[in-house]
Image (cartoon, rainbow over all chains, first blue to last red; front, top):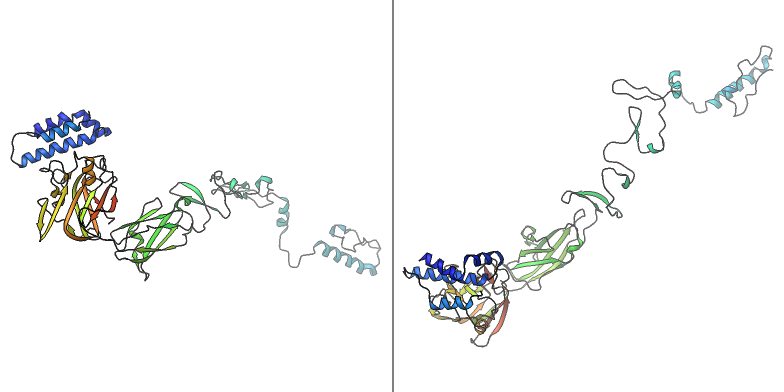
Amino acid sequence: MKKDCELEILKYAPYFRQCNAALSGEHSEYISIVLKLLRDHYHSLIESGETNWSVTDQITSTLTEMKPY
Amino acid sequence: MATEDLTGTDKFVDDLVATNPVATDSVSDGDEHIRGVKNVLKNTLPNVTAAVTATAADLNKTSSTFTGADGSAAGASGMVTAPVATDNTKFLKGDGTWATPAGGGGSSTLGGLTDVDTSAITLIDGAVLRYNGTASEWQNTNLGLSLTPTVTIPSTIYPSPTTVTITITNWSSYSSPAPWCEVENSSGTVVVAASAVTNNGDGTMTFTSPSTAATYTLKVKVQDFGDLVSSTVSTSMVVSESPSYEYRYFRIGSLGSTGSGYLAVVEFYTSAGFTGTYYPPAMTSNSQTIGGVTYALSGYTYNNTSYQLWKMTDTSGYDPTKTGAWMLGASATQKSDGWVFDLGTARDIVSARCKWYTYSTPNTYHSSPFTLYGSSNGSSWTSINTVTMGATNDGEYVDMLLG
């Protein structure tokens, strides 16, 4: 499930985007939100005993609508 | 009588004629001759009032030349060789030469110094040269009093733990100043020692204000490099009681349109310095009765099943992975309305603070200011303070009421 979360993060924030954000700040707010939302969601799934990765429609729509690239 | 004229002050030994008087001279003329010899002696040796002990050899040295030692053979006494015009600052060495003094680059003029570059120094009246080891250079100093500092202090100072910053406004007039500051109470007792004052090196100094509201005396002096310490400037420093805000409702609103504020912790305290009782207490729902008082929280938060408002009251510590209310996706109106904290009844709040999840350290996205409001009815709001987060680091408290 952790791997699924990582893949989900990469869908919105691929490595080169994360590198650019870290190096130059480019789109770093969006990158940070991606990381926070999906990590928080991962932790909430773990706490609720889930063993399969899934993403809520709200998270998907939020990250899609906010995506600046 | 065949004798020379030996009378008068211009007759000396060399005027004596060795062959006079001749044998045919009358004996009766002898007294005249004896007086003449005595006159010549006194004219020639007018200042000899004691026995002259110099030997003939000693006297004869006036015609020999002084010779120096050479390290193995001794020299000889005699007349010193006359110095030439440019030997005026030299001394006579044992080797018989006129030599320049070693070391110091001594000279009767600054320009003549050989081991100090004085060409770039602006000479001032009374100046002396002093070596500044820190700057690795020679500097002028007049050993005068350092310039008296001019000091400004905040117009409003609250008791400890408020940080007080004072400013020496003529700081740029010093070259390498060392400031000193102390605070005394009305009895002259030091309440803020110089050791507790931080010199920021830019003309400002900071210290924690005294714990009691009263009028104090702030004393400041400065010692510039190479100068004597300045006169002490004494300034009256009034520490006022921290203001309190008696409201039932508080609101964090007017959030900037940029960024998506994530508020992790909010605490309203009844005493200064984030002490006393804080409100709201730790809650587990957005409306909850605790100790007979009902507390309520309202406002926008993203996905209110994950980012609940009541988690802003969580006292378990700052945990950016879980806790707090988030303006992610909020409208401009929702950001303007912010979050409302109903403390159940009017509370006399003296200090307040909050923590934001800032995504980054230092804060990048939520540096836009927000405003803290108070209200007695939850609908008519009074602005209390506008807070700028600045470069607040992730997880750092932000003071909402100036301590």
